[in-house]
Image 1 (cartoon, helix red, strand yellow):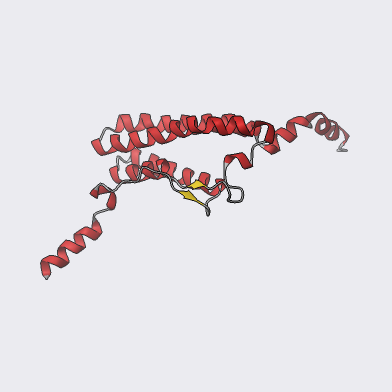
Image 2: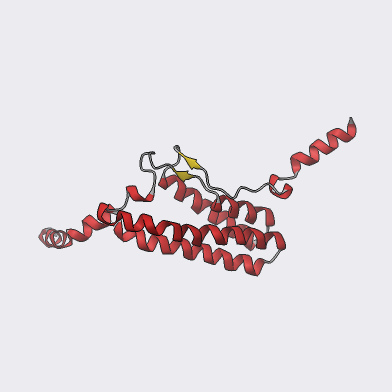
Length: 168
């Protein structure tokens, strides 16, 4: 009985990550919207950087897997995906480009997990930068095409005129 208690206690202390349990598939969620997804990705990126800096295999690996297998907003969920925020005339082009950006983030995240398991922290840091570059590439393409930015761009002359009429 005593041995059983010790074994069970040890199993509770051993994280699932150390047992080789990995999730490499994103899950569609009707509860997740894009804002929540981006906020979670930001917190996972902070966790990932801390794991790499402190050379913490568990923390880096868990954050990398969380980034690679984050929930995907369902197309029917309100304010779900990227397309909701993109101006209609640009929506199809951005949605077609999404798989490229997904690969630029998810692939390096899985590679970072593997590098962390091997203790190759130089490669892990390189993969962290690759993930950041993938995030930045997507934001660089999508941000100017959001509905808000397109409307502002279309009306910049009127906005400029209004600014000149403001009495100081």
